[in-house]
Figure 1 (tube, rainbow, N blue to C red):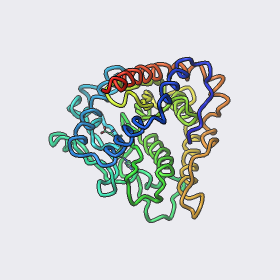
Figure 2 (cartoon, rainbow, N blue to C red):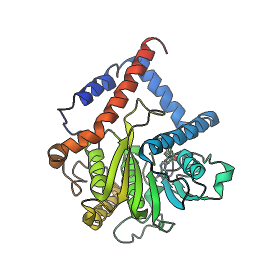
Figure 3 (cartoon, rainbow, N blue to C red):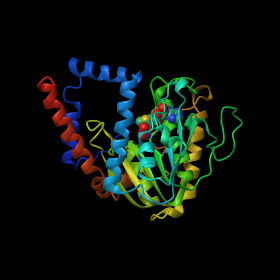
Figure 4 (cartoon, rainbow, N blue to C red):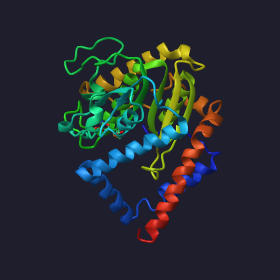
Length: 332
Ligand SMILES: C[S@@+](CC[C@H](N)C(=O)[O-])C[C@H]1O[C@@H](n2cnc3c(N)ncnc32)[C@H](O)[C@@H]1O
């Protein structure tokens, strides 16, 4: 669901869009992205190791700016879509008292391998599972594929970083977009029911100007005491992805809405999983997250805050794209 909010007043976003779509149909650019997609679909061990190291650096970058991983105190984290394991590795390395739980798609179903260091494995419990296949509805559903969430909630920090993979197999359906929508809502439910009151949530998102992204930013903004955004520069700096970090979960100005919002997310999960053709689920509709906030409020009352959280993300991506385009023009 790629509906974009018309945030016309942002010059930065306008310039970024010019950069994003300049040369989009150019054969050399298309060949470059096709090559990247091919590598991402079947990464060799060297590339997997490089991703692992880069993910470690990404969390280090976020932590240096936003201080989310404590150094010397008991700390329990949940890492959703955790493999290859860079984020978990960073947290276990930084804090010797940290213990973590991770969930990631099994390798035999196309998921990434776990590259976590031997030394860290004793403090990490890894569940190989499909995040879309837990009981996440408002009532138990008689579907033998669904399991109960396999851990006790109350985590100090939850990372929500699962990403739909084109090569994943054994999914409820083969459409990667359908799976992507279901994965997004599934991991948000798992993440938010698992984080402690007062805990921290790190959520990966793309394009703050997208309606659904803005709705999820609003969600964390009103449920958490404090949120910030960060666009990493050490990896994927030319892409539209960024992280939202919410601290003080359920201590925000609309924390009293939590039960109603959770109910809305769970009902939506049932729709995404079982509605539609043959009961195989459906894609997200434009109005699906209106129970959180509608686009009118995002474009009016919330617009200044959305700009404040987004401007530096657009600037960072623009600068990276400018650098990339110059390098491309000179033949790298
Ligand atoms: C961007 S990577 C996460 C990287 C990770 N944060 C790190 O630090 O190394 C996305 C992960 O989501 C996992 N994934 C994709 N679909 C999934 C699903 N349905 N259930 C669980 N994990 C999934 C992939 O296997 C992949 O490991």
